[in-house]
Every structure is written in structure tokens, then in C-alpha cells.
Image (cartoon, rainbow, N blue to C red; front, side, top):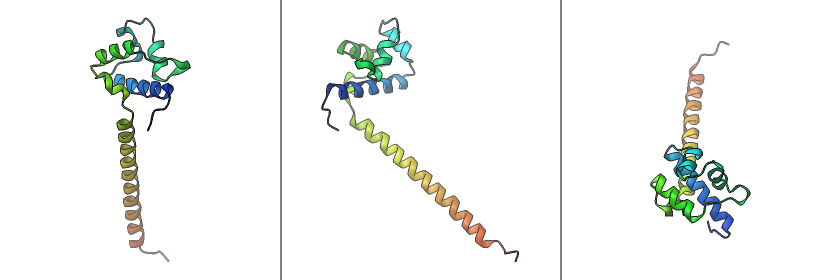
Length: 117
């Protein structure tokens, strides 16, 4: 995934901030207050790039310190994307396998039943 516009970069950063914030168990309001903002609008808007709101370098430095995350983690798009899809593929494969096992067991039990006619 090649980042070709600032908007794409801002969206990636926002998603990564949200991910790490949630991992640390902080609400948007708690993070905003720790950043010394009086409302949630900066964090909530920048996490989803709402109306062009985005985190600046000062925001990212504060957030990295609050969340105890290296600031470079906010710029990483690919690894999370690949891990997300890998986890979903594994989950889907497990679902299909479980379905096949249940269906096969059902067919085996059905074929062993004696016909009433």
C-alpha cells in the first residue's frame, strides 16, 4: 500500500491512534483530557479524519507519551492490515471446517438410521 496523499496518511495515523488508545483502555475523552484538551473533538475528529481534522506532530508526541507507544507506530499501515486479514482468513477457515465436520456427522448419522418404510 503506497501512500499517495496527505489525507491517506492522516487516516492511517488516526486508525493507529484509535487502535493503541483502545488497547490501553482509554476513552477518547480520557485521552483528550490527558492531552490537556477540554473536549473530545480533537481526538474523535482526528481518529476518523472528520472534516479534515488530523493530529499534528505535537499531538502525536503527547499521545505517544500518554500511551507509552513509539511515535513511529502511528505511521505503520501494512503490518496491521496484513495481520487483520490473516486473522479473518483463519477465523473463516475454522468456521468452514467446523461446518463441514458438523454436516459430515449429520450425514453419517442420517445414513445409519433405519428406514421406516
